[in-house]
Image (tube, rainbow, N blue to C red; front, side):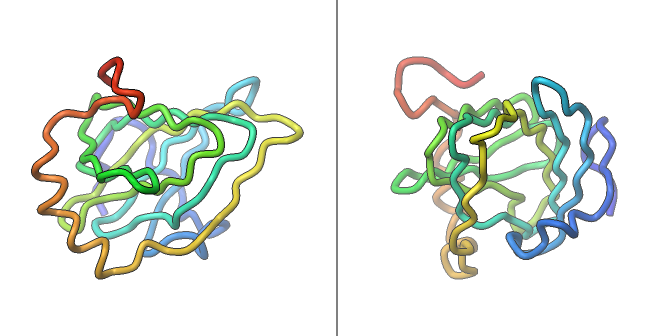
Length: 150
């Protein structure tokens, strides 16, 4: 697979493979007061629904085309330069579109009480129906409706 971003693609994300459909790659870039990793998804790859407890997450699209969705909200398409703020305790998923690879930087604040709760997969029927829905959403906005994400 060709790396869709300028950041290192990293190694196959085998440690978390059971929480993904398809192949992802993980390149840890920084793990100090802030955790920063580049996550790359092959076309069709996405992670399960999940919740980050006690820490928000920031996703910055750096290559390819991907999806992000919060539970009960429409899917949004992510392209390089798009930024999504995921509040702590928010059920969500993210990954590549069916036809393109995708890479994003994932930023989190580590801590003693920070954890991920991995939930159900995004099933194929739901996932493959997203192309039409995402095409109608051309601009990312924050879920609070006050400010744009980019």
